[in-house]
Image (cartoon, rainbow, N blue to C red; front, side, top):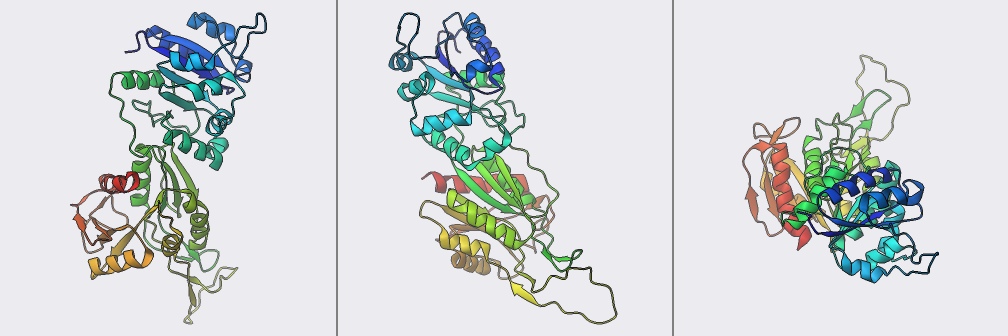
Length: 403
């Protein structure tokens, strides 16, 4: 599939640069003509001599050859290539790409390229999760670049590891799929979504709390489904015994409603939308006792105060481009109560499930939902696994986010 294809391989200053040698060898083996561009920092991790030997072409890193003054035209390089692959791509290079900082041949050529661009990020976890990196990846994706991460690219390896460069074999498979017409971009690439999941606990004393039976399974399933469609997902999770799998999920653990509220206020304005699936505590004790309350035969009362209404606040600050959805777990007058909740909290749609339905609700691996929108149109779904329910919700959400 790559026979005769002209590919620029951009290498930046990451420890993962050693993988670029294997990627280069695989591309050449597939019949591609490969021109390597390397940054000054990239040369600190792998030598141009090695790369030149593998590609059979001089490795370019400077605008001019100091020995004879030869000029390497970024315009000609951009027109020559059928694809531009930047692997590894550091946070620094992606930042330069989004801001048009042309201080090296690689970024300058990127700005001149008319071919598809594939980016394989590589950095430590903290850098990968930093808001500036997330923003730059979103921007590059919006501009048409294909971001290839472990488990997220077409035919990707499926290996986990946030921030780690995707394996060379997978990158080659992505290129082959692209040139064979089998490359289908993820439907939510470039989108960032916030999900709340699980319960919240409100402390009574150091041992006891007010909470509910939410397991978080539905919210976690939605987060995984969104990530598989290419979205960057901020999952704000109450105290649950669940793990995330997909590297595009950034997990934020909280305990109380107040903690979840503060995180939502920080994150939601930076997103394209949110699904509020957490079962938050509506009330918390007026006073939290600092020592364990001892048992006695006397009655005891706890005065409660209302917690912040997280979903309603998100509805208040929602921007025109954002989509906001919520859940309603009802026991009676289900559709009426769900519709009122949707209107009160300014949701674009609400997902209704009933505790009266066997196999639905807290703690189960299945759910039965009805989605109601602001035009009062109802879409009913049969009892399914929560993973399949999550896919139904994503299928409903995608047209709203991409219209």
